[in-house]
Each structure stands twice: as C-alpha cells, then as structure tokens.
Length: 75
Image (cartoon, rainbow, N blue to C red; front, side, top):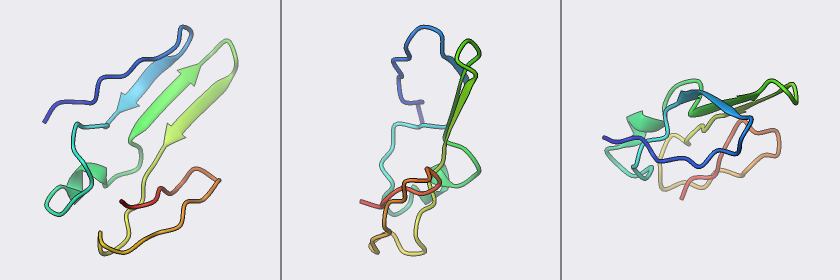
C-alpha cells in the first residue's frame, strides 16, 4: 500500500508518516492502529504536530470528534 502524497509548507519536517492511501473501512482497520499517523516538526516555530486517530470498536458506529487532537470521527 502506498503512502498518501503530502504537500508540506516550507519549514516543516515530516518526522513520521503512516498515512496510507486507504479508507478506514472493514478489512483495513490495521492501517489506522498505532500511536501516530503523521508527525510534523517546525524547529523555527518550536512546534510539533502529532496526528492520531482512534477508531471505535465497530467501524459503523459514530465517534464524536474532539478538539484535543487525539481522536477522529469514523466515516
């Protein structure tokens, strides 16, 4: 499976990318398990962005999005 192509602004460094070209559907859940999907760093701005996604137990259940950045909504 290929990684999703990214367009990253100048100054940002990709430390880790696990964003594969796959939708979170039945049979592909394992692509979204783990600690981080994407980690970006900007040393000049002293910023680190860590994108994570926690899928619900069943993919057909809705999970609310949270502003704290540690969960995403299922489709």
